[in-house]
Image (cartoon, rainbow, N blue to C red; front, side, top):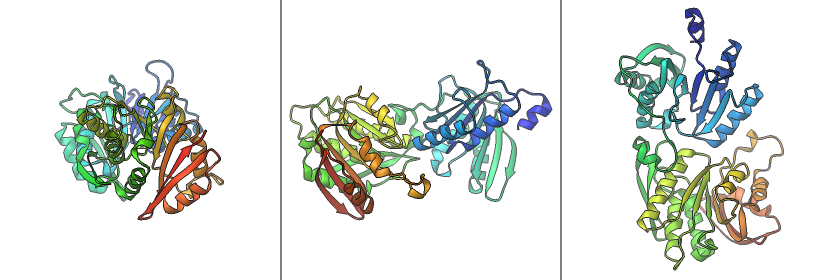
Length: 405
């Protein structure tokens, strides 16, 4: 495409979106290629690449890799957000995407229609897809009345280049935040329900997040341990917040609300903060918890914080509560494969080190791992935490501790 611009003496794209960026390879390559062609980097018409991914860890890796390639934040930004999110007035000269095949058919349909509507005049979309999706995207491009400019096929993937055709709808970028599913119902997958410790839960699930139809064994064993400890232990006061880290799509925080609600007496349910890597799962969890609050006429707030883990997200998690520490942290940490980390990295020790600034004195930590990681985590317990108990089930183990400092 850049060669074509040079041959036709057309302006090079300067407003570039890498949708679903992963670790940033496509966006970084595009920025580096444009810089090599002396595209200006200053002023409102200067080079600006926005990389976006639903995974907070991908966002952090993209920024790290951009720095390694001498790209400043003024040239390349990375955001944890859904596909085609961005500023309300955002329009792009070039949209790039190695489109995730598992994003869900309604989401992929919206991507084609919305991407065309977000292009500047003369703009183009370059999309990489697995071969099995080629016919689907060809038909969606036709339905959007876009122009398929070229098609390239490799051993397992196809690349489509398309642009505005005869019609261009006026569209807005996808908007994350409270009310996400109401604004973008094509993300909704189904309703799922379960019963844990005789308390029923019913949540609305979304495409692009794991754990569609049931809470899973990790959540089940956490609920069992919470039930054994008792609901009164999880609320210090009605204005001291709770934190659920990696809440999935909401089974556990919705269950926790019902578990605590009937035992708070005159107290209001404390505000709840949801943190984790996947912004789509967080938006689903927020939607489901707010719906649960509304059913019980609770005015408590629910906030979302993208966080790769409690250590990396600690500043944002504390900023959400104006530095107020949490009465309870309920965590389902997603540990990375040790082989992918620098030698000597200790994820479990880092988790323990992250907790003291987050957890209030007398606050409760309830954490769930697979059984082997739970055993190692328990052995690393520092001074200042008292163990309250643990339960093991189906290869998972939930552990509870009280902060004494």
